[in-house]
Length: 77
Image 1 (tube, helix red, strand yellow):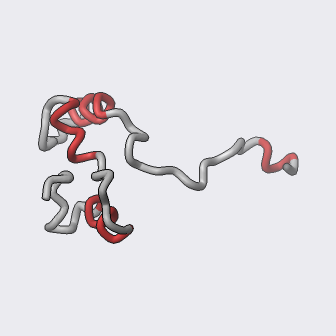
Image 2 (cartoon, one colour; image 1 turned 30 degrees about the horizontal axis):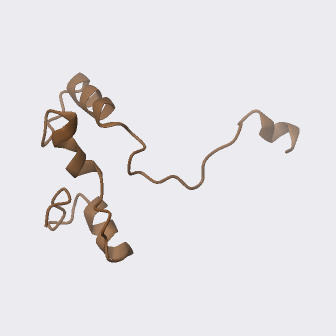
């Protein structure tokens, strides 16, 4: 790595969002910023932040992740 790039360190170019932020952290940040969430407990929030393991394809997974998609229902079909 060149000297000029070393000051930036390494970055992760491939990061899966599922599970990268604990439900408890999301709840704390939402509370701090007065953001309403669909659940107030870690257990209740998990279905909204974790995709089903049985996604048939990438499109189904991406529909779950897209908050503008009316079919996104927190993993409940």
